[in-house]
Image (cartoon, rainbow, N blue to C red; front, side, top):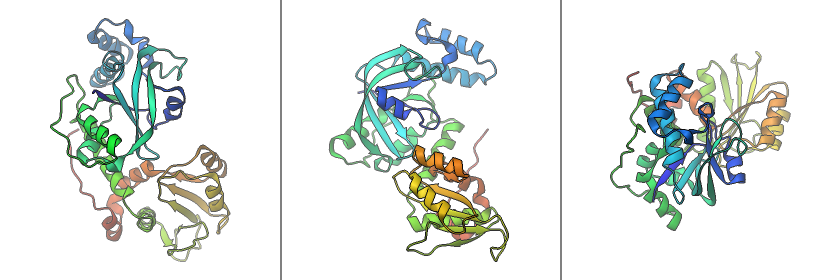
Length: 330
């Protein structure tokens, strides 16, 4: 059985439409209908012409992914995509091969395949580290045959953490060893580590991050917190504005609008508000937050902030998330 990863946009924004319309889609719309090219080299030549301002390597990699999506993904193949908000992989089976149709998902994602998406999903935590690393590639479309048997075992009996056999090579240019992929895999490993923290450790991590940014912080003790987990202020006494109130939700479920409204109504009323939710936010919650000036931070953004400020974290905060700096060539 052949398995493919197809990413649902930069921020998984395509997943709702994919599931609704039972498709998967990719972009590179400037190339037009890629099925008109007789071979991959001609498609790459067109990519060099269209994307002349991009680095040559990115043109080759992009065109090769389009070629693969059009010509290599066949009916009956298995497809997965990753839902960042729930940290789960969505599984499907291809029921119709490539069709160029800007009317299905939109002008930017005109290359589509028909997919029967399954209801059962696979939590990322069930996978081996080797498989997690493979799936951490920055590519939009790539073959994951070496991971397929692990997904099949989980789907059949619900168990994971099996050691996959030797890796297979994706013959084109789908490299998992370039710098971008290395950074993406390392970032995914940090994300996994942050996700394993318990709720109280997560509060301490967020407070430590604010301290690294120059704030004094007070963390609410375990128990009812009145909607505020962390208070941050510039001076030691908490008089100097701006004062920031933070709510931290560390769970799989997305945060809804009522919880955002609870933070807004919590004391101090006139403080700036930050809501950290590792399970993401519902669209209604995002609208309420935007309308009321609440800064929302999901797991992905939290990890980026931690990596940005890690060197400035206090020792006790670093102890929650021990990381090692590694240098890679540019």
